Image (tube, rainbow, N blue to C red; front, side, top):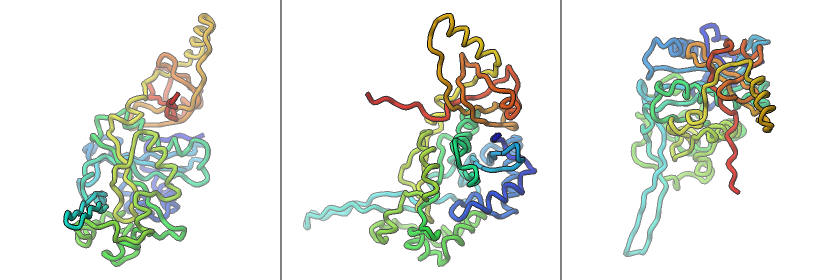
Length: 357
């Protein structure tokens, strides 16, 4: 049985084990025990609400309760760029024209930007390869949206997610090789490691401040701007299902897309509902169906989350709220640590399909 819960102080060893399997390109989950320990401390303080909302870093872990093992992690940072610079490239356009020569051209450019400073960020999504089946990945990613829906007052207007950019099969980045390497004089992994440790001053010191013409880059580098790593494509699709989209911001190292959305437009904020755990709900619905001779509603895959911040827990189940009541099996209630009469937040795991007929 799998449950997602708020991270705890004793999770450092398992968290480090997960980080060793991530590979290059994810700066927020590097296998450095000291930085992970510091991040875990901040996460625990975040759930305990002992630090300011803007400083919080909510980390969620997926636990295989039968094996007592952490198999996945995901997180939400309340705000980026407040303590250290947060850089992106913004794709723009410069127009060149000459009436005398009758020439008009649009040139795509890259601007070094701090535009997304202060936004909340989805980050650190990683699922152990042995558990990448069924709906596990969806649950690990989408649990964060239920947390935001339960506590929207803690987050800024805009939410972003940096996606890992395209890499060759050998782990190298065409974009970095064609651009960043010329300014930083180091390989991709070294620059990636420095930023993960908070050492970002070299970006401002070494990167040019003037616009960079995309056309000057080799074709291979141009083609990967805004593209994700092959292993990240499913994660991007899941985020787009929840209301996030690409608006022309990319990572300065590998040109991976930055997805963004207004918090109030997220599917979880619009569609999730509070429901009361009620073991009698099925019986009541069955009686109503019998009386009205209507067809009972079909069960759908759902996400169910508790409403407590410090003890936030999430599971997936097949079911449906009935008059804002939901039935959970005893094992599910045990995983969530809830009893009949308590409130939970529920949402369909998958978005409703829109008919175009």
